[in-house]
Length: 191
Image (cartoon, rainbow, N blue to C red; front, side, top):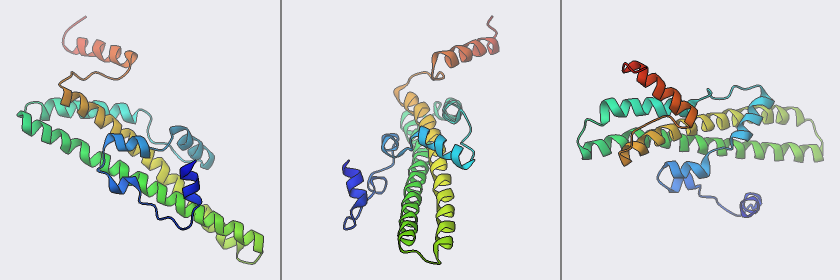
């Protein structure tokens, strides 16, 4: 409720959390677009969603990289390398969320201008409506990109967090873990 009131206030300057706090996976909890909203927007405008399984793919690829390149390092180097893997993807996801929010704000401003023009009447409705359509597509594309980047960052974050805790990586979910363990057994010469 407060955020809605704040969004309607004209004398308030917003200092976005994504610009005040260091990028982290926890920050993405506040910034990440709702996947249902993303799917709805993409469907309504005929836009493609990020690839299915982006989280799982980022998680697995990062875990493989960690096993091959990072785990052999000494403790301090390993922690630094893990931070180096996570920091850029989380920062990119937070930046994509910021761009999505800014695009949504520009869209809202344009729709307000369209509504005002409709109320007043005039010859300038058509250009405003075209601008609103362009801003709608821009906002939707930014929203979809932010969703994809957040999914990838979460996948990287899971693999990095497991490595930080010293836990062995396995795919998330019972079915995927069972499939992975079965395949790993075949590769290692098991049944």
